[in-house]
Every structure is written in structure tokens, then in C-alpha cells.
Image (cartoon, rainbow, N blue to C red):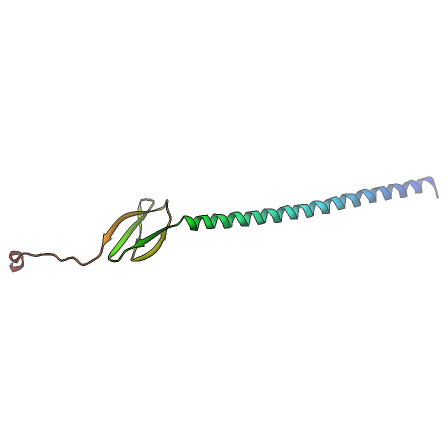
Length: 116
């Protein structure tokens, strides 16, 4: 074997070892990225769950009594009418415009107007 062939084998082995090490580091980096990504995903899922719970816990319950309706406005415009019962409203968006009575009312008409 010539000196050139020995050097060629040594260089090939060294470069092979170098590339194997690089590949192993690359694989370890991928595994670490996967773990970090999974941890971030778990954290993001928890944040979304907490935000949803917070939103639902902040909903304001409203109970509309018998013979009443509530007119709601959202951002200054009429939004909807709440009939009798239990309702959930969004605190900073929904505002009560008015509470109206819907019970029957008697109107007295004098005899003079009725005869004409």
C-alpha cells in the first residue's frame, strides 16, 4: 500500500466520522425541536382553554321577570330583545337600553269621546 492510499483511507474515515457526528447532532436537534414544539402546543392549548373559560365565566347572567322584556344594545345599536327567562350577556358589549313592561293595561275612555 502506498502512502497516498493510506492517507486517502484516513481522510475518508475522518470525514465519515465527522459527517456521522454532524448527522447525530442534527437528529438530536430535531428531537429537541419536536419536544419544544410539543411543549409549546401544550402551553398554547392550555392558554386557549383558560381564555375560553375566562370568557364564559365573565358572561353576565340576566334574569328577566314575568311580564317584562329587556332591550339590549351592542355598541350603541339595538341588538335584541330578551324575553322572560335566564340569559347570558357579554359584559362590555351588551348594555340594557330599557326594561319594558308587557302586561295588559286598561285605557279609560270617557263617554264623550266614545259617542262621537
